[in-house]
Length: 323
Image 1 (cartoon, rainbow, N blue to C red):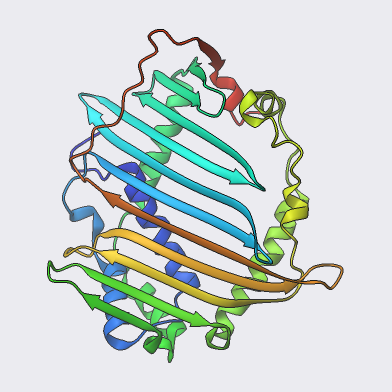
Image 2: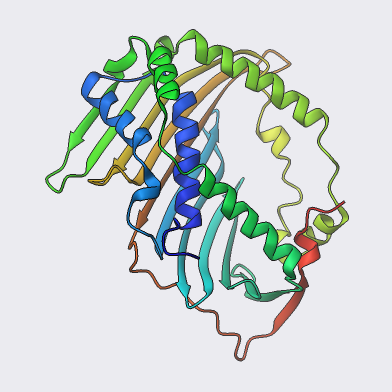
């Protein structure tokens, strides 16, 4: 990785958040708060300090009618060692009361270890050839191409969509120059453009599900690993009702923490949606999540030591998307 390049994970996170906030939250600002929000979108993130390493933490929860369906916590460390891009991370999640813990260790493109901490099982992914490595490099390049500031046309569109909702934004300035920017939007504040976007997205989602390919044979192999035992009986389609009528955003909350250079250091978000399923039953779905970046250029990923451990080999083709 060249020193001028952003770290993949952080660049992707900032890019994804720019897209997400510029659409779903475009209708919400307060002059000072909204101006601070736009300053983040307008900042040239490609011109900041080169990021060689960082720690990323995040959590996510999904509840339906007050019942927790999915809950997850993750932590990742990314950095460089010579010409290698090293990554280590832990993921703990719970689906309908079934808990799982996993870890990943990657050293460059040729050494990847997966640890099933729930069952104390260890795996090494083999046959990571140039084709597989190339896919990851291509994704990295695509992420960097979107790492730019908001242009004038995009700003004008954002201002138009926001309209009179600027007062929904607030900003709190910290002594070190950092800022906490927040936006709160209730159902009655949601503007017509966003409601139209929701309807369009819902229709597109239905089309996507109708044309979704069946599970590949490789994925069926993966599901037979001990890590997935106990999860196969969970029917998420039943637990996550398909809202088809009277779909509405009940509440949206977004909070950004940015440094003195308007670089995003942390994000918290809440989204609550209501609607009726095909049977006419009303449901409420709430999604909460948070993430932060820390120890920039001061992170050393954890290394995996296979000594004395029974390590099983997994072919990379199991994780491929080939049909």
